[in-house]
Image 1: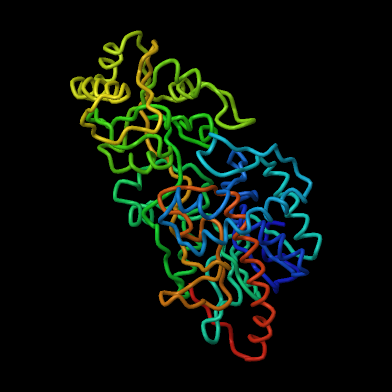
Image 2: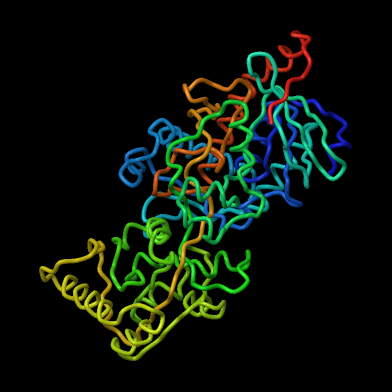
Length: 471
């Protein structure tokens, strides 16, 4: 169904805005509890950014591991994630979709996960919703929330090809995928240069949920300056979805990163997501990734995770237009990188100091050494210019652990919930998984929304008031 004007039931127990991982997990959870659920997706197909991902369903093993890796995240949200993740894994497994073996070890740096058939999961969620009397409309965006007495949200105005249609609901769940596609919001929160960062997600996540929540009193979370994404080659011709996975330089944690002045600026082993964020504020938002051939063979041309795509990510970046150099000596590599505008003398000094520090010598460094240094020793040597890419922001709508949208005084906005990349504050700088987080909080929000929705429509009807709107 693609036209909300054709809806046979414009009144639902729960209205979900967005059909990505969080929205569809919430919708399926609510449908299983006996609710009539409506889902509105603004794009032609369901799945959101999750449909473009590698399908890795993962999270930290426990709260202690999460805190050690991401100490700045909201503790309440972190406890909820780690407490509910095992049950979410069992729930996904119970759908009957294909899941890989348990993935641990060096693939994420921490945590545990499984690769899942995301398209199969979304199809299962769709069947749960529609099989229990609910509906999913596509090519349909929410333009405003409907709110009445006391600010209670009890629906939304949906707009599809045939125009606007109001839908009444006991509660509304925002799951529109974040604000990464809106240059104004990205520049306002992440930084003045971030509006030019490549967007590595679906094209529909432009802050709809964030704005809708704000219009009815919802507050912003913390961590608005951080984002999840990965380094990719620079420049890239005709950036598109086909580049998202093969051009991702997951292996940067095993390489040397320098800025366009030839200096290291971060401990590379912290993680590619940390380096990715740091590059935004560098001159030109560019950096150079350096590796010897031993690192290339061990890390660059191998699968970054079990069942992952095996591709030479340096060569794939070069084929897409990125600056890439190979040389049989370090001096020739330095000369090649100097042609990109990196001072040869500074780069030479940086690599020499790194090599000495890796050998245990006391050397003054521009950035801390990584946990496992990777000096350039085995020819040929490789250099790739890289740039940041943004998948979703770490900040967004302020929520509590049950997904209630909170106002600036940390009070519930009645009838309104958020999950997935629309909700912020769980992570701060670091990243602990997107699919797992979205599933956990989508399901939690669905349960809390149904508990509130039982009285939502009844209260609106008994009040006998005209519909109020905020948009």
